[in-house]
Length: 217
Length: 171
Image (cartoon, rainbow over all chains, first blue to last red; front, side, top):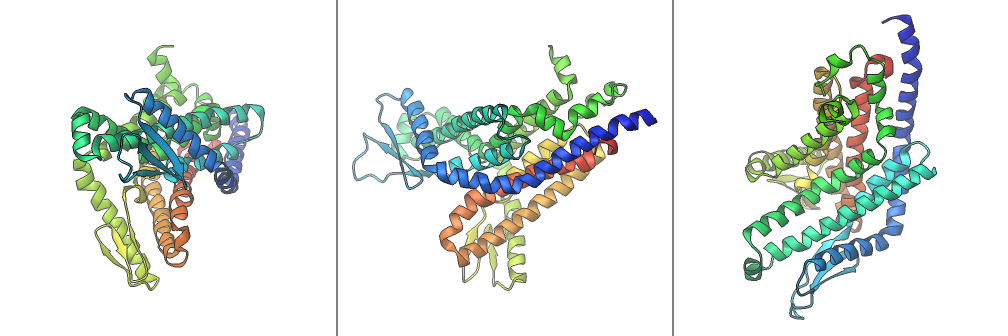
């Protein structure tokens, strides 16, 4: 390594390290803030997620009989064609929407979280997460219809439909709930995170070795 | 921009690899055979380790399959509670990141151990929350500890990138 190279790399390295340290130091604090925000907004989020899921379900339903009612942070799956004494299945909305905390904590830990640009990104990211939560609830309902109602399910849904809804529920459940906030955060803050991780700098600082490095990812 | 040019951009390469590894790994662990041969025994090992730690703390804990029980409380460790999903996200991030093979090896082994350590703390703490504050068990289980475990996985990945993956000059 030549001296000029050292001089160029050192300042950029310090910037990268500082940004990461600040992010990691902020994260516990922003986690607490995110929990508080989520607890405050939870009733509205539950209702909005159930509302969009119901709209999407009813859009492909003939006759439109599904009603999703949120009570005590659980969404009850009511069908108007069920007997009144039927048991009403429900889904915990805490499990569906808790990943909002992760998204908020990650956003708030980035530099300048209240700048207009970051707030716009947070809004867009939250919208995508909200949609994913609604899709998750939709798959819960459809998987219950396809697999959980005995002979009725057998009669009204094909094996293919059961596989599709079962697969959709699985993917939007644990893998989706855990990875979507991270992916959304990464996607909407791409250059900020990449700069923090040093990927762009690392490659930019090594133009002569670029070809050798390719394909090692 | 064609695919070759896209692939030559490190951040695009990282994203493509990350999503591919993540998608494939999530699909693989969803398979029934993999679940029976790997996921369930893996979860049972986590249960055994949790029971062992609880016995060190003086609990008369017994483990049956994925159920850890004592006269005071019992928990069942399900797929979402075994740290596997967070581990897969972490490993996907490490494998996709442009780094040396040795750095990736350190990341995978160290990260998996760290995530499991955090997960064991989670299970043991939830056990005691179940004993002393059962009314808060569900909240602590779902939105406190699940969020903590995900953020811990992401933090570990960022720390790994700076300690091991980037060249010394930039870290």
